[in-house]
Image 1: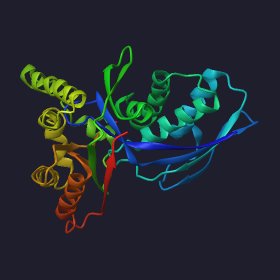
Image 2: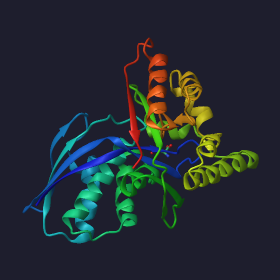
Image 3: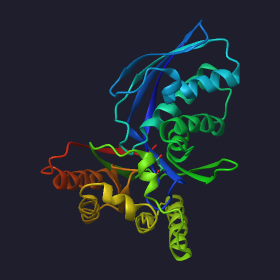
Image 4: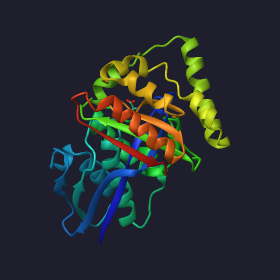
Length: 298
Ligand code: HSE
């Protein structure tokens, strides 16, 4: 009647795949406890670690829960406790962790009634509440695990992509808040075909590199000509962090989701730790608070 779940942080876009690619991190995520109640309502009784609304219709957790209870005609309500381990506005899929964790937990309480694709659709309704757009990259990564590709939004088509076990993520999260909604406004609505060609070729390269465990190809493909050129201006020391990561052995680096977090991918934990040190060196005298994570991808 009660379930405690872990819901991972996720890196969306992965440089070349704006709104189309993402991966989930093993080492960072929220915890939530869902308890069935007789009363058929959704009550958020505890929120720790972030300043988020308790009203169910204003919190992505409540929104997703209510949709699922309605859709499944459940004969129970829910008491929900939320323990946020990373902040909203981090670029690490905070709202997505809340939304996808909720979808996963309720599905378990419903004995696995829904597929991962259906759970992704429920969780996307939470993303609308959080940032005004039904984006799938973070929520699908959290639900499917590992790397995913959103091949199509209409109809929704999510492809799980194998992750080389040696691939390790390093992420720095400067504690400044960038709202996804605002960061989406600086991404151009129109791009030259020449730019589009480079971008979709890199997505192909990244997917091939992940399948073939070709680490150099993965690195060569971590290029973003669409979102990064404008968004990086919102992130202090972005170029310095990227350069430090790559010169210390990272395969590539870029903005995590809509920022301000910056991710790097490396072959092996040793290199990923060295990259973490290099990121730390860039930020340590900046006067900005930050956290650094090294994580497997699963
Ligand atoms: N793909 C999204 C963006 C991720 O970059 O705006 C944030 O949900």
